[in-house]
Image (tube, rainbow, N blue to C red; front, side):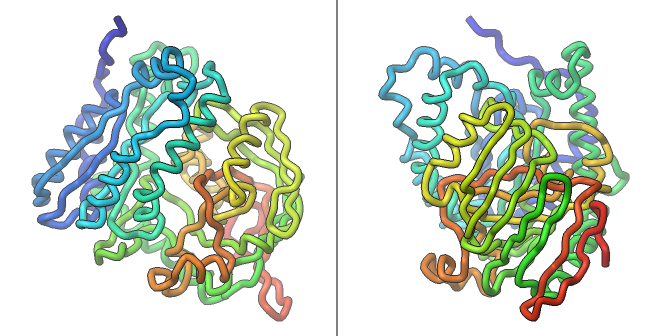
Length: 417
């Protein structure tokens, strides 16, 4: 029988601060709201701390759905073949109903990134596709900002030893916890105030980009010469944003990015990844793509390429871009030198693009646009949304206006204005 997970001691004060930031800054939880949380069972200490602060903030009901690595692996090793085209659609329909009744959403990330590395990639791909289809009612509420939501992280033993190989398990967990706390800005005396200052800085970048109203962004770096058209009526976002229910939240903690919706049919050129991508148990290294009229027509990787191509073939929108995000090379996560093998962190170390679904919030008056109108303006639709990193200290970016004027945006990985 598999042993129950242990919970090595991490700094209790920083853990409590992370819970406070998740509730008050991440969610902006309002009195009377309920909260739906998902978490790996190894994150129980953080779940308990968040639950306490949620109730202190006036939550009516906190419901947590747990995942467990051993039971997940049991499915791939013991379930019949037909099981991998099945997903709990009833669960995601229930989540969508909860969001429609103003329930807040919080996810704790902390699974072993390599959990499925030794499983049949065909089964993994089928299971992921089935889940993506079933999850659509719930994810639509997230991508359209129907409710306030947030993601934070908690260390997992195998994740910690992947990031810090060679250390004893307990030491690796504590070290990863400290790295999470630092990236999440809860190693400060008043992290809520620190987040207010950080959001103000991100909003200043966002407002400058919106005032420029660029038609395209031109990325150049070793192996990269890519022109990303921006969607018609696009809007840059970043940091705290207001959901449709009127509550201001920080969806990702940590976050260093400003992002918007590219035009799914106006992306051309070549681009090279600057960091590995950890996706569903596969480490995908040295990704290179060639885009023509928005479609990735050539896709290679020195490792994990077969899996990466299978993911991109999930649907027609999988080979088009749904997000472009700008992150300076000097971001704290980049400067830490740590590869987290977790997109929530690694995407905040570098400029990145995302294959698949766009965010409707990244349009002017996006909450009033229909799916057809979003598509007409260049927004992409897909069951997937996967960020991969393309920025470094060698990245230059020019903004191109309608009249062809070029404005420096990044030089050598840093803001140029």
